[in-house]
Image 1 (spheres, rainbow, N blue to C red):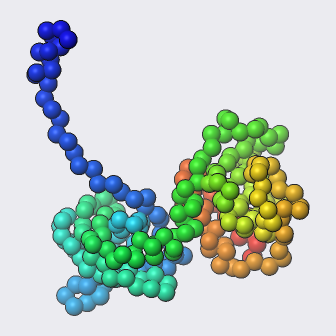
Image 2 (image 1 turned 45 degrees about the vertical axis):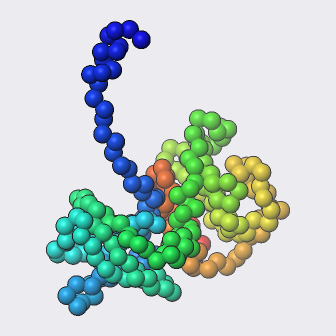
Image 3 (image 1 turned 60 degrees about the vertical axis):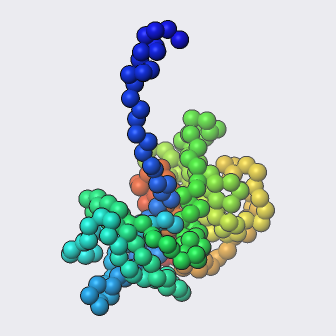
Length: 246
């Protein structure tokens, strides 16, 4: 080590170490998910609108409350799921333009498991990986796109001049296919497909004539939480899926 480097080292100030609090993946919530939060203020229970939810905290729309406590203060309330309610204590962390970010304080042991079970669809969608289109096998009818999450979940579609030429979604054995000028069909996969981008053959799918309307709700939640899926493509695919129960 030369003299200059020694001098530089002595004069260099140590940067303060910032403590980073890990933040779990936030899930978007919509009216379809039927999750409610109420807080208690002056003996009254006040409903608040949820913007997002994770294992570690919750985002609340600022418009839900006319006057908010300062960051660092806490609020007690109740989270209502479809079949369960859980008492929570939340600490206000920050304010954004539209949302109040809060952290759960000493949450009940089963809160994380309840969120996981309830958001199973969203969590699996959030885990999908967007595969670089440049490395996919080119298709004669357009540009392929693939969101892959292992053998259980995937979205694959081919796009040409803004149109979804064809697509398929597989979700834990459920299968939907369709596209522009193609019928939208629902079925169940009979076996694993080793080449997910290859169109399924008739012997791997058991097509069904009837579909549970609640499945459309699941698909909306699934598509809503796929990262890097363009809103325009999402809406077009949803419109195809909607044909199943129209």
